[in-house]
Length: 104
Image (tube, rainbow, N blue to C red; front, side, top):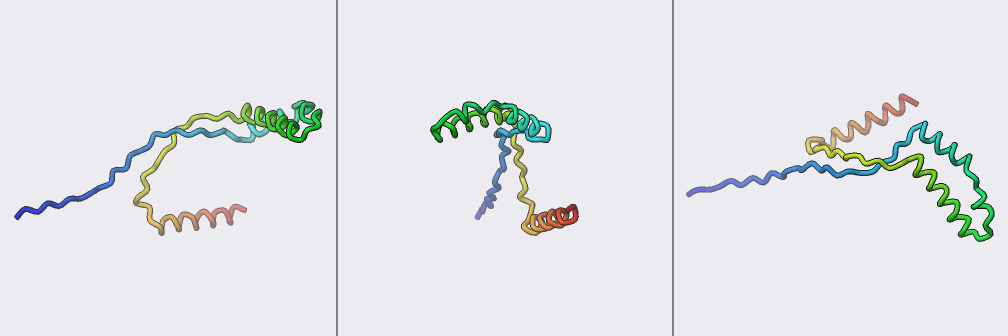
C-alpha cells in the first residue's frame, strides 16, 4: 500500500507596494513656519462668517503645508519575520525602554 505525505508550506510573497511619505526635518519645518509667518492672513480676518474664515484659513494652511512637505513615493519593504518569537519581541521592546531611560 502506497501512502503519500503532503506538506503545505505557505509561500511568502514580497510586496512591492509603494506608499507616500512626507520628508519632515528641521529645514522643512523651518521653511513651513517661515512661510506661515510671512503669509498675509487678510482673507481670513476680513470675513464675518465663521465658516468662511475657517475654510480660508484651512486652504491657506494646507497650501503652505503641502508645498513645504510634498508627498514622495517610496517602496515599502516587507520583511519575512516568521522566525521572530514572542520572547525576542519582548526582549527588543525591553531593550528599547531601557535605552530610552538611559538617554534621558
